[in-house]
Length: 182
Image 1 (cartoon, rainbow, N blue to C red):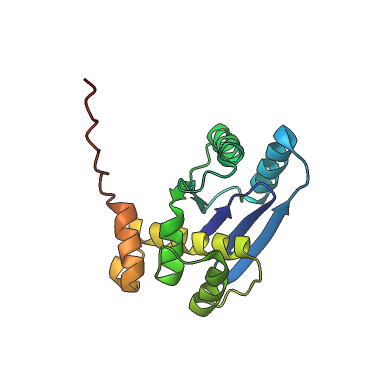
Image 2: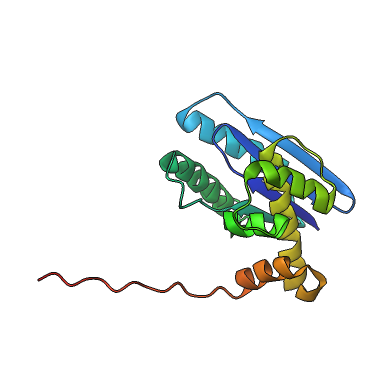
């Protein structure tokens, strides 16, 4: 099985592919804008996905960070549409879940995640997009192995167990009561 982690960004997208004892990595960069940029990034990702035996994880939106939300939303939408057309399945993981899975802290700074990914898995990089993509690939691998019973949740450290349980059994969000207008 091949596990792929994607840290989508408009200027530098991190792509990591893990299989057996191998690691493939790529930084997908472009200076283009608009639809050309979306097309380029999506094509670069599609070209790196093997024909079969893969499991893909993508960092979901950072809802608390509205900066460039529309543009990154377009990239996510373009990639999701492309995956739909090619019948490519994927999972979305919350940024906090990825950080907690890698570092034990859901609010870890991106710069510290580089260090935590190296300490936990020995993956060396000086680029936070690649560190994020690697953490996503490792979360994707753990998620898949637990789903297919290749591993038990208890095989992972407690903080990773919490992340996996949250993914496998999400708790519904509480809805706020709307104030009635008079």
